[in-house]
Each structure stands twice: as C-alpha cells, then as structure tokens.
Length: 168
Image (tube, rainbow, N blue to C red; front, top):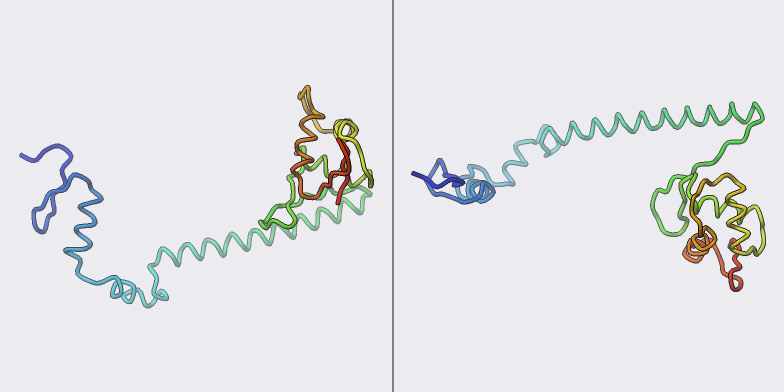
C-alpha cells in the first residue's frame, strides 16, 4: 500500500512525494518530443500555442475599447468647455521618473495645484491652509507637518528656506 501523499509514475512506477516532482520526471524522462519539436508543431500559430493567439486577440480588443473611451472622454471635455465649465485634468502616471503625476484628489495633487497657483515661495502652514481651502478633506490634526513631509519629498518642489518651498 502506498503512503498518503505519494505520486506514482504511470510509465515506470517510480514514486514521488510531490506532484511537481512527478511532473518534472514525466517531462524529462518520458517526453515524446523535445521542446523545440513542440514549438515547431504549432507552426500555423506562429510557433506559439493557441492560448497565446487568444491572449493577443483579447489584448487587441481591449486596446480598441481603450481608444473608444479616449475618444468619448475627449468629446465630453469639449462639451464641458463649450458650456463654460473647466475640465479637471487627471494625469495618469504611465511610468518614468522624470515627470511623476499624482492622482487627482490626493494630497500631493492639491499641494502641486496650490504651489502652481501661488507662483512664488510659500510657507508650509500657508500651503496647508490653501490645500484645505481648495477642497481637500482631512481629519489630520497635524496637516502642516504632513504637508511639509510631502513637499520635502516631491520632485517638483524646491526648498527655499526653513519651512518655505516653491514649485520648480
């Protein structure tokens, strides 16, 4: 009687403690084709299994939907602008270190908005007050301290003096 948790090879009868070990044994000892032959057998699909072809088709469909959504967003922006409203620009971070973007509604986004509106050196306590005035919701009792920490780490902000920063 075999122990619980043992896996037997159907070709040679060898036993393994783990299913992964049995799978490795089957692919190395009892494989009928080499890996090169297996890839070549999928030649009608460009040398790749049909799963890859289905993934590519799904990706292409999502890319088309993405383009359609971008067109709809642009049309809505034009309609809002035509009615005299302003469009809040939401910058999406797509990678890269040179120009990081912050999500709309976050504290760094509000800090950036305040610094660009002020256009000069401004104290941390004034930035915290302007962030709250701009509509940022916070229950932080030490918001100026938090704002100072964010501003010290933000790449688009330059320290001018003690507790005074400005946008680069």
